[in-house]
Length: 518
Ligand code: FAD
Image (tube, rainbow, N blue to C red; front, side, top):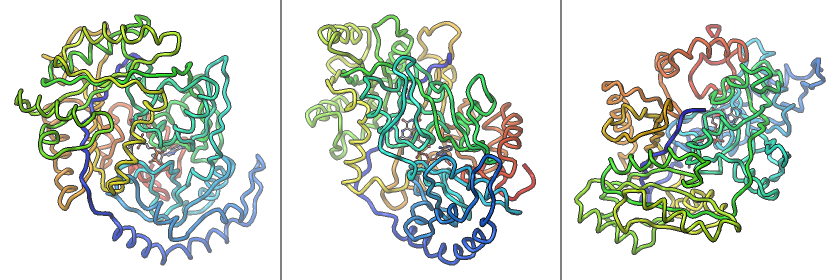
């Protein structure tokens, strides 16, 4: 992949807040009136049948559909806590064959039911919900952290249901690790591969979907297909970033690299956006072969008031460093502080030279003098940094709150031409910009939604040409514009691999199950 990606995230660390019990209760109450008729219906139609490939359609499948209060309530919402939709049941498969059987059961009906795989449900806009259908709880397929791998060929076969944190621990036992990571690891392989999988290593390796050799996919026709760039490649490429529309990913063969032991984890601070973006682009232009750059590059923007008005805790900065940053804000009068976050991996054999290497690199950068902060941590500590943040937010009661997140891919050349430094010839550079905000007080959600809408309207008006990542569009026209010239091909692939339109209806891209108008 010749595109380079940087993540510039705007983090807003929330204060103490409310919870969302009333809405969860309402969802469960409505469910109670509908599930009985659905279960009876399944019993009527699912008593017989041995398909050509020996997959049984038996009441056993129906018995794995849970309709209890907790299962339904959990599957009715997601991390975003903005959208709710009640499924008729939650399916607990123990193998990919169970998923095949469920899908065949659906499409054997005159009016098929919708089916949505749910990894961790860490979507923000109901993408893993199945209103009136069946949610597949992929957690039930997890069995410890076992993965099979080839140490010689540097790949691992991992289940679509597996958490990246488990993949990390399993591969580390062999001294290996996936080379491309998301910032947060308690999300699933199937969930991130259905989107992209962006993180600070993307400038080197592309997104996670560019680091996959092969997939097992259960299509909307109930067929299990092993696909790769050489075999059934249309399904392979459709499923990668496919928003769950073409099949359920049950296995992925992902690229590994020798795992480093330790990491110099660095933040450098800027008071002006030009130096910040120039330095980011300098850093991502350094080829791996030069041995002189970071192995991970991201950026963050912190609005000044979050440093000066009331003290925020940080899992990276100490209290005295936060004081130092607050003083920088007051001294410069800038509206925001910008951080480049970098990581330099090292091992026993490079331990003696890594500090010098970092010093040389920092000398090339134009951050505010004296504002470089370095932590020496294990590789796991570095990769699992957001997991620690999660624990703190959970303890403060501000994890399960609405998250009106907006993520955008923004082309660099429209970002601001003045900020551009030389980049490798012929390569596209774009930023992944995440406004990752939490609604914790009354009125926050509405205000943040208005701000998101204003950002999108601005991009539209100014012709910025950005695309949503983890996208959400309320209309079919919105989706057509989102996919642009890819739309016709996607619609054809949908007709081929999910002609009854049963898969992942929460994305709202294609007409829902039972519709004839695909
Ligand atoms: P779910 O929300 O369960 O599902 C997402 C979609 O994929 C749904 O449509 C679902 O039906 C479908 N799906 C799920 N499993 C499968 C499967 N096996 N086969 C086919 N379709 C499937 N993303 C990044 O790229 N980089 C980041 O750094 C990053 N950080 C994050 C940090 C946090 C705290 C959170 C909450 C999210 C972050 N994300 C990030 C976004 C995340 O990658 C997506 O929300 C992802 O979809 C979550 O995975 P999940 O397993 O919870 O998927």
